[in-house]
Structures are given as C-alpha cells and as structure tokens.
Length: 88
Image (cartoon, rainbow, N blue to C red; front, side, top):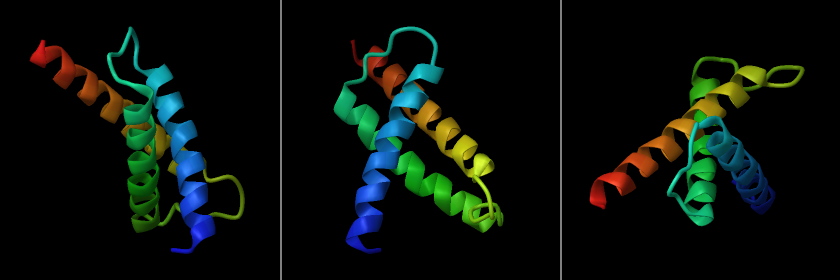
C-alpha cells in the first residue's frame, strides 16, 4: 500500500466512523479518536470483505462496499459503547 492509499484510508475511515456513529441511536460514550479508529478499521475490513465477494471494484460507485463499511463502523461503535457502559 502506498502513502496515498494510507492517507485515503484515514480520510475515508474518518468519514465512515462519523457516519457509523450517527447510525447508532442514542448517546455514545466513545471518544472521537476511537470513533475514527473504528472507522479506519471498518473501512479496511469492509473493503477486504467487498473484494472477497467481488463487489469491491465496480465501474460506478461502490455502494455495496460503502454499506458494508458503514455497518461495520456502526457495529464497532455500538460494541465499544457497550463495553464502556459495562465498566462503569
């Protein structure tokens, strides 16, 4: 992976993380840095899953890949929120 790919993964991951956080209802006790980290991981894992199923590289907008990434980000934010609530 080149430096441009890493930078784009960080930018896209940030957007995916914030959108994933907006999908989860209620107030989350997850900081912005953790949200961004979850988004970056969700973007990378979502791209890998989409590529595995053959929907990662289409001729138009990769809507299915984005939906996978958003679902993973929402699940990640919800899981972190639940784990933080259990500790308190």
